[in-house]
Length: 390
Image (cartoon, rainbow, N blue to C red):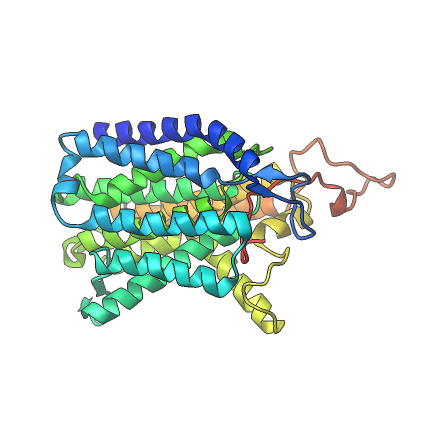
C-alpha cells in the first residue's frame, strides 16, 4: 500500500506543478476553447490540460519502476509497453483534435488504432462470464477489447461538460478499481503489485493534481487530450483487472462471483455510460448524427432544473461514488448490507436531485416567492469537448 500511495502522490504533484506551465503554453500556441452556442463557459479558456496529466502518468510509472515491489509489474509481461503505446497514440490524436478539430470518423479511427495497439501487445479481455467462464479466441479477444476501450474513451469525452466533472468522476471510478483490486489481492493472496492497481492509483493522482486548476472556475480545460487519455487508462485498468482474477476463486465470497470483475467497471462508470448511451439514443431517434453535439447531457439537465454548476458536479460525484462503493462492497461485505446501503443512498440522492433549491441561499426569486427561471443560473466553464461531449 505504501508504494502505491507514493506513486499516487508523485503523479498528483507532477500534474499539479506542470498544469500551470501547460496553461501558458496552450495560450501561446493557440490551444484555446472558444465560446460556442452549445457551451456553458463564458470566455475562451486554454485547453491541453491532458498534457499535464500525461506528465503525471509518466512520473508515476517511472517512480514505480524504481520501487522494489512495483518493479515486478515491469519485469513480467509486455503490458506496460502496451499501455504506453496506446497512450502515445491517444495523446497525439487529442493534441491534433484540440488544435484543429477532427471529424468523428477520423477520431474514431485513431481511437481504434490506440486500442488495437494495446490489444495486440497483451492488454486484452481473455474471458467472459458466458456458460460459466468462456475463454475467448485471439481475434474475438481483440475485438472485445477494442470495443471496451472505445466505449470508455467516448463515455469520458461525453461527460466532460462542467468544470471538474470528468476529472472528479474518473478519480472516484479509479478509487473503486483501486479498492477492489487491492482488497482482492489481500483477500485471495493474489500478487499485490499489479498493473490494474498501479494504473488506478496513478489515475487518482493525475485527477487530484489537475482538479485545483480545473475546478469551478477553471483556469485550464483537459481538452480531448485529457478526456481520451483518462478514458483509455480506465479501460486499461478494467481489462487488466478482469484478466488478473480467476472467477472461480471468488466463489462463496461475493454475490454473483463470476460476474463481479466485469460488473465493477460498469458500476463505477455507470454515470458516463448512461450519459453516452442516452445521447446516442436521443440523437438517433431525432435522425441526427449520434456524435452531433447538443445541450441535453445529464449535467445540462441538472442545471435546467435549477441546480447550481457546483452542486450539479457534486451530485454527479455522489452518484458515481454510491455506485462504485456499492459494487466494491458486494465483494467484501454481506450482500444485505451492501444493497441496503445502496438503496438508502439512492433515496437520499433522489430527494436532493428533486430539490434543487434545498440548502441554497443564492437562488434569486420572483416577487411571488417562486424560483426564478433556470436561465438565471450562473454559467459555468466546462472542459473543452470534442464532437461528442457538448
